[in-house]
Image 1 (tube, protein in one colour):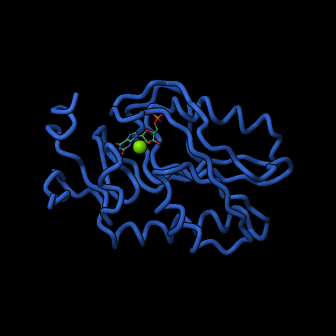
Image 2: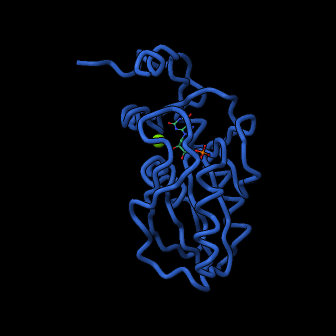
Length: 184
Ligand code: XMP
Ligand code: MG
C-alpha cells in the first residue's frame, strides 16, 4: 500500500499549530461580525477540512453553503479561468457572505469568482483563506482573513490535494517536486 507521507518533503504546519491558528482566526472573525448572521461559503473541495474546523470555532449564527469551481484541473499551473461545477443553493442577496478558500495563489480563480458573487448583491462579501502565497499573485486579490502566509511551494494536506490525493493528511506539507514533475 502506498505511504503518501513519503511524498512530503517538509511539514510546514503541524496539526497542533493549525488548531491554534484557527482559534485565533475565528476570534478575529467573531469580533468582526459580532452577532450578525453569516453565510459561510466553502469552495470545494480543498476548503472542506478548514471549513469544518473553522465553523466550529465561530460564535455568530452561521449558515453553510458550498460551491465547486475548477481552476487547476489535475495540473499544478493555474488556467486563469473558472468553471462553476456546483453553484450555491442559498440566495445570498442581502446576506453577509464569508468565502472560505483553501489557498490564495495567483488570485485568478477569485478574480473571476468574486464579481459573480458580488452581482448577487450580498450585504457584504469577505474572503477567508487558510493559506496565502503572496509571491505568486497575478491579480490584485486580498484576503480579509488569512490563516498562514507561505512561500512559493506546492503544498498538500489538510484538504489540499495533488491529483486528488493527500487531502486527508492532518498537516500541511511541501510536496516533493519529483511527484508532480514526473507526471507532466
Ligand atoms: P489561484 O491561483 O487561482 O488558485 O489563486 C487557487 C486554487 O489553486 C489551487 N492551488 C493549490 N492546491 N497546493 C494545492 O493543493 C498548492 O500549493 C496550491 N496552489 C494553488 C487550489 O485549489 C486553490 O483553490
Ligand atoms: Mg486543488
